[in-house]
Amino acid sequence: MRTTVDIPDAVYRQLKARAALEKRSVRRLVLQAVERELQPAKMKRRRVRVPLVRTGRRPGSLRLDNETIYELIGVP
Image 1 (tube, rainbow, N blue to C red):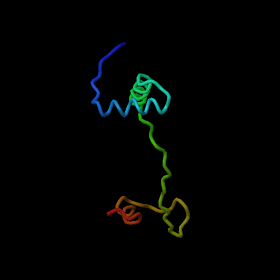
Image 2 (cartoon, rainbow, N blue to C red; image 1 turned 135 degrees about the horizontal axis):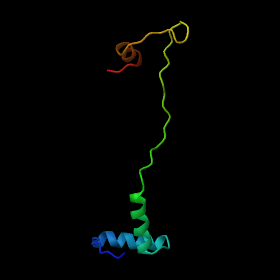
Image 3 (cartoon, rainbow, N blue to C red; image 1 turned 135 degrees about the vertical axis):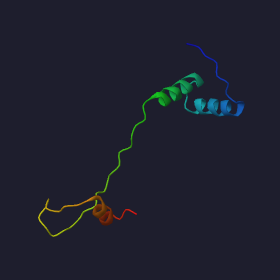
Image 4 (cartoon, rainbow, N blue to C red; image 1 turned 30 degrees about the vertical axis):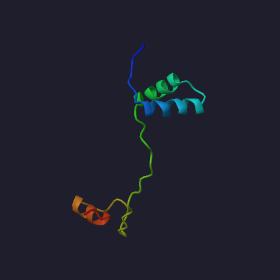
């Protein structure tokens, strides 16, 4: 399908220069940018640090409510 897109002159010059540097056509560069934009966003994976609560009791024997949890992890 053909379409017309108005691109400001300064942006088109940058687009054309980038395409030349990467040895690609302007058409291919624009098409790849559009395809990339239409892909679902990838979620970045990051390590989560879980606070360690030491109680001196047997594991699983601590009864906590939300207020106590907030105090232990320092939520304002």
